Length: 407
Image 1 (cartoon, one colour):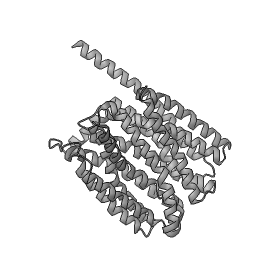
Image 2: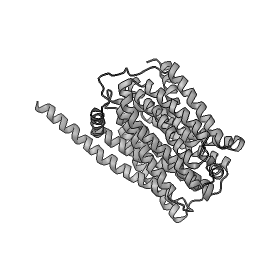
Image 3: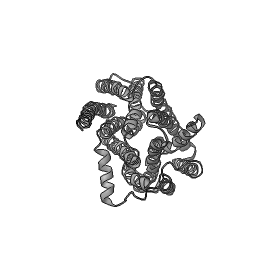
Image 4: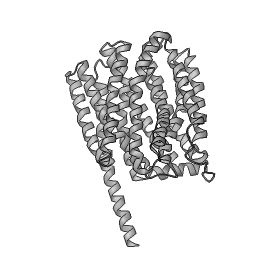
């Protein structure tokens, strides 16, 4: 593959993976305005974020088999069309209940972009390059929070919160056009792939039973909960507790996102010298330490605004170091079932993300303790799953080697 084609493909895939982060982050500064206009409270508006995460999680389980049966592009077109229609519904929402439902359908459409992107990386690039491509795409994921909340705050101030959904609709149209006219089909339709419930369930089971998949997919997804908890809790922590305005919140949110972007850049360089497994092990330990310090400091009142920003920045940096590598190692064993594998991976990430973001909605604390506690719990659980699972992988490899030698 030429360097020009390599860059070209990564840019197009970056458009796909950026759609959902923009959909999640751009309207966060508008929570107060939405609550006021729809005659509700911010905690109710927060449910529209949770419904988006739920739609992303369950929708991916649908698109995975469809993309293994019909190729990547046709289901992608269908999903983006649903997203566009639901974006119109969000714009027209006259109640918080309608907004929650429209956000659910918006996610059910938008998740097609996520599944297609992860599967196409596995289709288009050799296994040795997957971690590097994921690292580049996670730079896009980090850049999205850098741009989206800031843009959303200015849009809300200038044109009202509905303008955010007009912009999201326009982005989706651009992504759809790029997919139709520019993106190559990376996987031919497989007529032998059955869409009956039994074979579909067996496909999912064959993927999830693979020790390498479940170890890295679950560990990475649990670590990713720290990011989702932050996204859900950021308006409460920075606007309600520390009293930042919409513009200030947008810039703080963007500054913290630099940690995620920096992690992707550092990870890309480290992959030239170290294996993904080595990077993950160190990152998992550092994530436990940074989130633990954040929790201890938040509980004892050590951190003001600057300290809180610094600790969240550091914690999300280690999440950004962990996730590209866990994603790459999860997908590496699969070629034929890459659509199902990417769907399961995405569903785990977003399903657990919905749980962590919903958990933030249950707290009305006047401190950052709930956010720090969720981040620390995610870090510890992720590390335990990682190190126990890696032992299971080694045992399976040894057993397979012995079986081969015996024959």
